[in-house]
Image 1: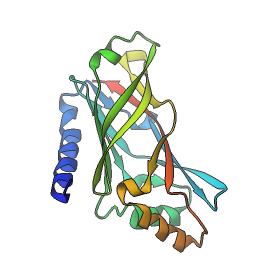
Image 2: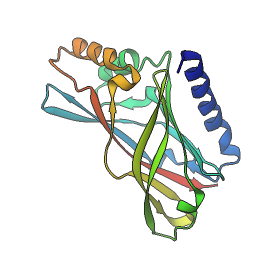
Image 3: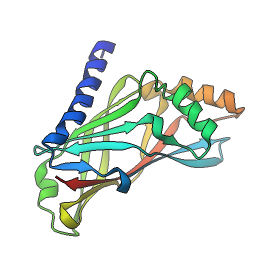
Length: 196
């Protein structure tokens, strides 16, 4: 896939995310959602980080999108946040990560209050100028007022070389004077959607 196709795909996903809210059945509730990832340094020290600004929709046809503001990374150390945005994510060029997928509406619309189900979703993740297919298993729970929560059942592991992030990790390692930082990053999320 050439760079022009990747750019067009990412722009289409962003436009869909921005415009789908007008017609969406569900809109992501950022205050009640969470998106975490782990990093391991010096082989034995694992830390939890998160992104605090998320947006997304699920429309009437089950087309779902999730946008992550990469500038909202929170590692609990301000200088590390700055280094991640500049050296790893290069947010001046790639400010967002976008995931899009298709879910059959019957999977969640037929749930009763408090009921849950599991399903495997396959979608396209656009990150750092590269788009890759991602597959993961999630749990869907129907809550009060037709709210819908989608959560990982097990961590989703992203490898840095999938999105040309290895050089950025090496730069972080150099700046922090570390012997190692893992190139594999486990991700977990719990996404709350409110019915529109």
